[in-house]
Length: 228
Length: 228
DNA sequence: GTAAACACGTATCAACGATAACACGCCATC
DNA sequence: GATGGCGTGTTATCGTTGATACGTGTTTAC
Image (tube, rainbow over all chains, first blue to last red; front, side, top):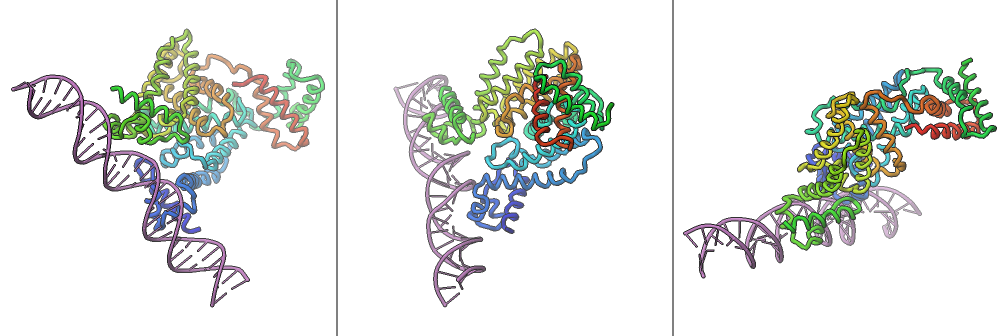
């Protein structure tokens, strides 16, 4: 499949160089030195071509992000992830708009992968007891906020001339999903178990047997973490 | 200017009824009973037509919002503004996507007007000393977050099947721009449940069945505390 | 050696955005 | 009252675009 990558590269170049973010299959085929039927046999559709282009452009960004080593504090990863996301959007505005601003019927891959990487970082935060909501919901919030800001920066630069809004919004959103407590690196689970064991007698949502078994399990977590 | 409003109404209907969010000037003219040159003399361009359609669709929403009486607490206005914004986006997905997801060169007035109304509410909050940043910056943050969420709900409904993410994100974003006047509502037990649920996949001290049941119970605690 | 499978280009279609050229009704001006 | 400008509409047409039918050359299997 040599022609496929050729078409993909030329299409990506034309998309990056276009003023409106729209490209024609004819121009792509002419740049790639092939006829139109070749393109349609490989990608089936113009939308199929655009989806493949978006996936390719995003892939280099996502592989770079995957390769990045997790730092000691997941909060740093969360912040740098936001900054990288925003920088990528500004560097590839058309590809970004195709992924986050239009409804391509066949592009779940890049978006799902980005969300997966984000959720990983958030789960590390949750393990430390610093997340005030489930990682999935926090991920949706961060992703929606980040993409909303990036689209605003791309599509309305005159209304958002100041790029410093990005770290400001980043820290605001991150603050809103975190607890106010300091990080508890290792003992978070044990502390959480203690907290819940103290809470159990005051709730009515469990039967006596459930409560008893839950208390046993929480105790098991607690002793696992050597908190006495 | 009777034909202008006729064309505008027919175009809005066709846009609302279209599957892809795209309409052709030919179809609009045929529905309005006029020739194409009429459309082009009035709106100059297809983009001019789309901008006018977006402005018209948004106008009914904005006038409704303008007419709404300011409540005693600007925080209530801010919350209802978020909810109305989201509801409008879901009710008019194509017009919304045209305004917040594409780069119409002839900028619709609607975006600036929506931002102005939002800033008014935020200025009332600032007067009460409850805003931790200038109203303009807070407005950009809230607008970017709200539009990002709305676009995600419109364009990726399968990834965001739960509409309850909207009030969750609303309160998170609002909390992040306000001064810390209110404590975390539910506090320790809910956070402890979240922490332990994130910890469960990484421990070996439970069997698969134990882990599954424990996760269910922790979820029950979490929802009982309704962290939002 | 022959036929089937495959890949590619030529020519073409239907739909689209946009425009030139012209036709009609209205109103102020002389 | 004739006339010229002006707003408003039509018909016919151009160039471009997404998409495809069809023929041709090449490779592969037996």
